[in-house]
Image (cartoon, rainbow, N blue to C red):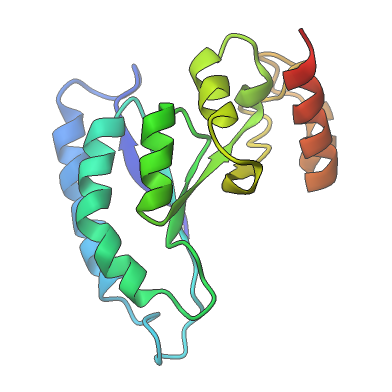
Length: 171
């Protein structure tokens, strides 16, 4: 599996968000009727969403598909996917949780300049937060803007969580 989603960042072409949305909806339509549904012997895998500067458009799509994916969840599964490297507003993150999507923060969470990301993280209960390294693209504080190999030592969840907490407490 790869990630799917919407990206309205400066890298996206003008007007491409509508085309991306159509593609996302088509992908979700296929996945909602894929053979991993209960009883077909396929392993359940949560969907990984990439959502950049497209929170409103993404939430519209997620609202429409959430009931179908929630109905497909195997027993014991609590979410049908997660937003990776979250840059959502606090309200957007809370809505994702209500829709059955988890939110995952990258090293950007430890960067002082990502105020909205930090605001979103602190608005959530600790059990609602996933952490990812997404290194070397989004290295934690201490390696800002670096695409280095050093940050890969933070790949253990314990080490990264400790480092993220350290950076958030640092003022």
